[in-house]
Image (cartoon, rainbow, N blue to C red; front, side, top):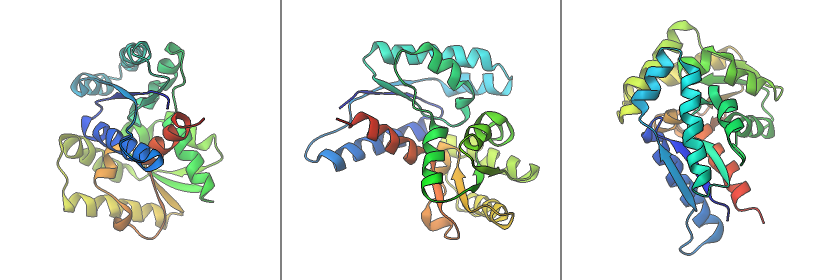
Length: 231
């Protein structure tokens, strides 16, 4: 079993899901008392969020690249960047590493394509929905990507940062986000990408039955396990 490096803390709420899902996946695959071989670097999200809002992406990339190199030095044989938004600097992080960075967008796109879906709605932070780094990665796999309108983007972004990232899960917010998703379906989305790791704390398969959901944290974990457990 290869050792997986987790670059997390953005937010720690979703990083905890990575830890749980990776260990559950190894136990399911190997049985008994087996658990995942992991090393974790957890950054201070307040620092990263400040760099995001000030558009200091080069500094954010340098910070995460340094943390990723620490994971490699600690024995990580592949690295997961446990956040959709910060895949904006995935190229900087990958370039600093001598081991693979498993791109979350690629893992997601491969699952969408395997499901026979060609047009997806994308929910995530404003950065993820509005900028091209993530939509473009999905589109490079041949997918058509729809994003919500401006008011809906602001709503979803606020739920993520003001609630989910601080551990607050509200039924009213779930209803509001599902309504945003349904508006994307009305525009032609055949599936919904939960393009923020925290959104999986709010929206699950029981929340929206009309189309398939693609939970990026779980898909990232499944892809990592295929690599880590390959013989």
